[in-house]
Length: 352
Image 1: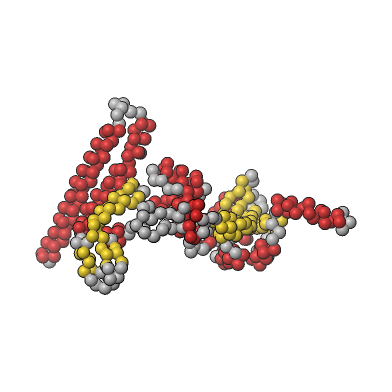
Image 2 (image 1 turned 30 degrees about the vertical axis):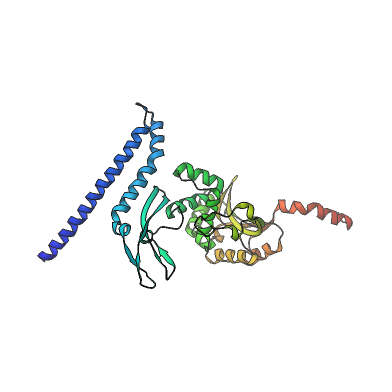
């Protein structure tokens, strides 16, 4: 028992020493950042706004540097590794490099120096440190991508791009916002992105409060052709100097997008419930509506369901099959497009 106690005590000492060394390195990094802050705060009596803006402009230098220090202290073996066994052919590979890489995170830019290993037989290369850290390909890492997607799903891409730059200090173009959102959403179903039944019921209860009749839940379904970027324009060109395909070398493709939206009427405003709009065909949209129905997301017994759509036959076929008791309303604006032609036909037939 005494021997075991000594081993445990030794582990604790090593862990404490490890943390004390890391603390000292973090303090050194913070001192370097303070030197930069001192140079920026030239005014002897700055205002609160000036202090806030200066620290905000320099904050990612500090937090990104702290992240670098933690990585350097935590993974010294991977950064100085001289040899690696090829996982496929088991050959012993010698390190190349070190190779420089700079990645963007929500806490700032992180610069890495790590060895590279390449197997000539298998024609495969690897960076062990990248694998240990779980780095993604490209400059922006998972936390940046997730934050960008969260913003892009609530706002137009241009607006999301501008706000993301202001809030995070990281530049993400509207095109990149679209690409990231597309990557995250690929393979997801409407049930996976829709609010839970409990959340939808909560919204229904809020709108129904103080009302004698059940609130009106509107379902709108429509389709339209939209311009899209072809797959040949996505990604990057192979080679050492990879460049994104130039816009002048491709033209957009018109593809049909179909979708639907459920929303509650609350006086002069509407309360969003769920929506699903994709480049898809009629069958895909019908399956998505069926998933919503099967999952019981719409509390039909607690609302008055009203379907407002144009006169397309494919729309009403799905409505009749899934929501036969709903009030069916022909959209006035779609109807008015054909009203003049209808009157002309009636007039030629001698009918009032």
